[in-house]
Amino acid sequence: MSRKSPENARIKRQYFEYLKAAKGYDEATVDAHADAIARFERSTGGKPFKAFHIAQATAFRDKLHKELSKTTGKPLSKSTVYQTLTAMRAFVLWLAGQPGFKRRIQYADADYFKPSLKDARTVSSRPERPFPTLEQVRHAILTMQAETEIQRRDRAIVAFTLLTGARDRATVTLQLRDVDVVECRVVQDGRHVATKFGKTIETWFSPVGADIENIVIDWIGFLRSEKLFAETDPLFPATLIAQDANRRFVAQGLSRRFWKSADPVRTIFRNAFERAGLRYFNPHSLRNTLTQLGERICQTPEAMKAWSQNLGHENVATTLNSYGRVAAYRQGELIRSMGAQREAETSAPAAVQHVQSVV
Image 1 (tube, rainbow, N blue to C red):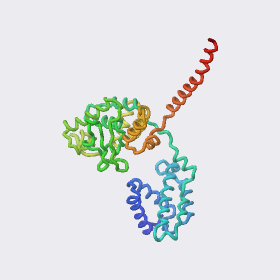
Image 2: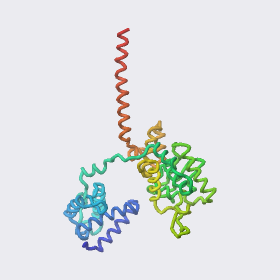
Image 3: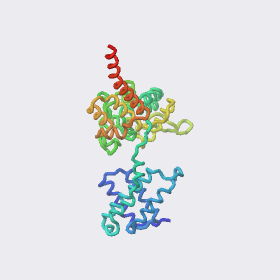
Image 4: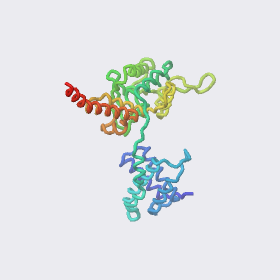
C-alpha cells in the first residue's frame, strides 16, 4: 500500500492553485493533472517528491505502457499515456523552481517524462472523425415528433445546435434572453453561459433552412406566450419529474430548472438519429457539418472569417484545422474532378491543332 506524504499533499495543493490562478486552467484540466501525479505517486509507493530520481521517471514510463485500463481491461491508450507523461513533465519542471526542491531536482530531469517522438506523432495525428451531412441532420430534425412539449423541446435543441453550432454545455446554460429572434442572433454570454474558456460568443443563425429556423423561433414563442417563461429562465428547461397516480416517478412536462449537465442533450441526439435510421452523431459533430457548409458557400476570406467567428473561433485556422478536415469520400471526389479538368485542359490544344491541320 502506498504511503501518503503530508509534504507531497502540501506541494500538490500549491501546484493546483498555480494551475488555476496562474495558468488559467479549468477544474477538469486540473483534475487531469492531479490524476497523472497520483499515478506517479502510486508507482513510487508514495515517496516524497524531494526523493525524486530519474530512475523513477523511467520506471513510471515503462509501467504506463504495460498498465491496463480499469474500464476496458486493455492497455492504456497512447493518448492517456501521452497526457499523463506530459502532465508529469510540467509538474517536475515547476517543482525544480520551488524552494526546497532546487537542489534536489534539475530542470532537465523533467525531460525523462517526455513522450517518445513516435508516440507524440501518433497522438497529434488527427484520425477522421465521422460527422453527419447537412442533409442527414435536416432529415433527423424533420422526422422528430413534436406532439408534446418535451418532444418540441427535443426537436428545438437539435435544430438550435445546427443553426448555431453551440457546444452542448453552452446550450443547456443559455437563458431565454440570450436569443434575439428578430435579428436571428444568439449571445453566449460567458458570465452565465458555460462557453469554452468563459468567453462571450456572438452567433447568427446559419443558413441551413428557414424551416429549421422556424422550429427554434416557434419554440421560443411557446415558452414566452404559453409557458410564461421569464427572460432569465432556461432556453431549454429540464424535464419535470413527478409522481403519477400510481406513485411512480414519470416525466410530466417541463420544469423551470436548468439541466445540471449536457448528458440529456446527447441522449436526445442519439434518439433523434436512431429513429431517423441513421448512426449516432454527437452534438459536437454538427460543428464539423457547419464548417463543411462554410467551406462550400464562403466565397471570400472575409466571409470565411465571419463563419469562423460564428463558431466562436478567433482564428480561421482553428476552424479549418479542428473541424475542416475533408471527408475521405469528398477528398476522392475533388481529386478525381481536378484530374478530369486537368486532362480536358491538356487535350484541348491537341484537338485544336488537329482541326487546324485538317483545314
